[in-house]
Length: 150
Image 1 (tube, rainbow, N blue to C red):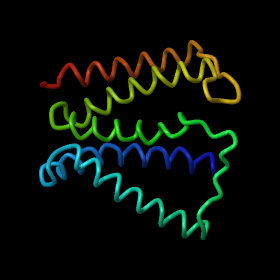
Image 2 (image 1 turned 135 degrees about the vertical axis):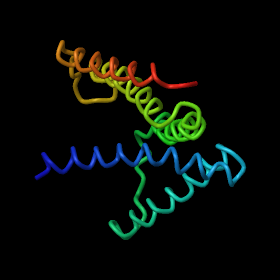
Image 3 (image 1 turned 60 degrees about the vertical axis):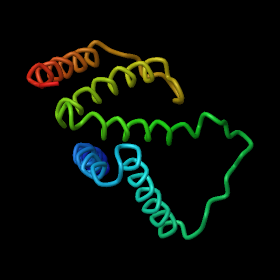
Image 4 (image 1 turned 120 degrees about the vertical axis):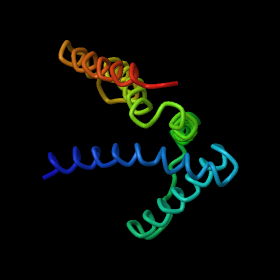
């Protein structure tokens, strides 16, 4: 079951990312620009996650600070950068070109993180098959971008 569930879940999240950029860009027109749109997007998301966590767990967690590092909180900053970028870029590039570039960046970073085992229990070396997949997706991104008007 999980062999099908996780890929479908990831696919659905990918579909929502494309829509999220457009929704947030439209919101930006009414709330004072991309910064405020991102703020409201994160505010609603934070409240939703808080409610979801309380429903699932019923209480606030005990945070273990012994091995906690400052850089472990950078995920929120990365998410904010991503959302701000999508709000700002989507009106100029369109959804397909924006997503193609996001995927290209994700694949380059993911291949390096996997290959060197950064923040993972063990490295997952880059293979010819993975490189071929990246190249095929890069060609697709190029074809999408070659028809885009900047």
